[in-house]
Length: 116
Length: 115
Image 1 (cartoon, chains in turn brown, purple):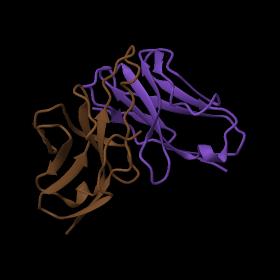
Image 2: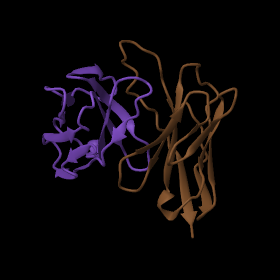
Image 3: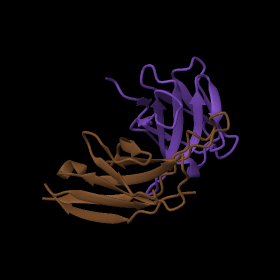
């Protein structure tokens, strides 16, 4: 059911920018791109989401291509605490009395390892 | 503020027993979700509540699984006649609204082990 494709793993040096790619070539016009991360033994943590414009918050930046078929999550200055599995998710917007809005398809994500 | 709270954090039970897992959502959040995560996999959707009613329970694997949210706040996931294949981390999440722009905020889960 996953509608996204991510590399299984990536490495990044501490202090450098981590750029995590995601392909979502079948995304529909009203579907949002969400990013979550999961640190070992914790629940998924919300990072950021966007529709078509680039977004930035205190945690990260989200760059969505103009055709919306791919996106990149950017952690501008990675730290050791950013080591986690990062999930790119397309959130379905179809409303059947809102019944599909709870479904997030997580897939297997990208294991990001930040090394000193 | 307080996040989503799940109890117990760990539960070990014998095959065939009944278990209840509790979720306290973030105060004021109207939507509540249950997910299940097996080792090495991403979380998988089970059920979604808007208020007291289940808006989508299509992810529940079979009729041994049931969830309630009687007062629109705390929710309980109930598993009857547990099987070893039910062993997983059960995650609860809540969101301020049901809209697509309302992020889900997850608890740290209950690790269920069925022996």
